[in-house]
Image (cartoon, rainbow, N blue to C red; front, side, top):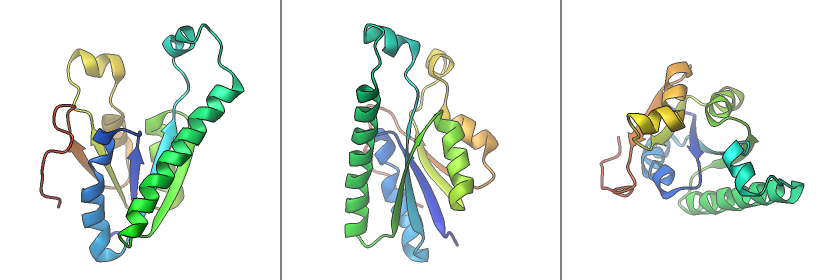
Length: 156
């Protein structure tokens, strides 16, 4: 079955809603769950909102927050008996997800999509769509919306 399941998380409840599905997939085969958090470069808007000042401390603070977040998710999964590896990368999310899938030998990527369509997709793009188009391994994608991130669904 699966030996390693890559689970990209962005720190949101929406992204975490894939975890029960990843647990279902990993459980029977005793696969390792690889948690990935990608810190993307600041956008021009974010730089302007900070009055044009981006300090090394602000970048380090983002990294520290991401590490603490991943450690919390890792603790919860390990408490359930799962083998977990956590990774933090800097770069474009889709690119880093694909790179990490190859680097870790993942044979499944389990992730959510925020369900944007139309102008939202044009403005923000779709990380899930980019990964889906380029992934050499199967992808389990769960579409969730802000209105129903915890909607009950039966994992595979």
